[in-house]
Image 1 (cartoon, rainbow, N blue to C red):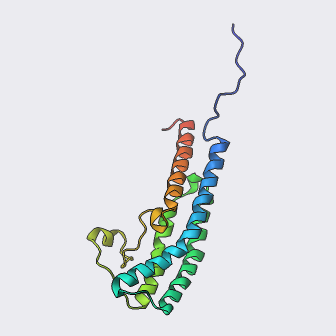
Image 2: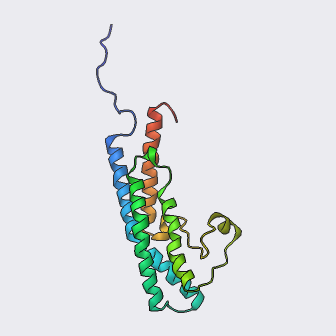
Image 3: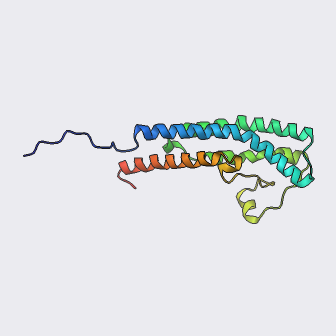
Length: 173
């Protein structure tokens, strides 16, 4: 009779400690990126719509209102994104982009407050984002800042890897 092997399995079930550490690292990178990008996105959104409709740069009072809205957006949205990304993935009931999208209310408030007319949107956009009369809703992190595209993809891939490793360890696919 052969002796029983006492060697540990080659790979532990579920995600490894390094997988979890990498996920935490890329989540922090994404949260930092949103923190850095969101205020500028609010200001650029106001500037872009203003210029498209008025044919000139926004006046100082509009720029100041956009800057204040940008600071308020960062204060309200960024901590929520960071808190979500700090949760274990099995506790995350939404995704960070879904927390960023409602930030359209900040540039929308500035534009509406200065009498800028809503833009023409297709029926799909109206149905999906009824509270976005200026068609500002970011469809990806790249809409906030092109530099965020990779961070969003890497975070999503790392989260998927951890999720799959857990499900496989549970005998599920």
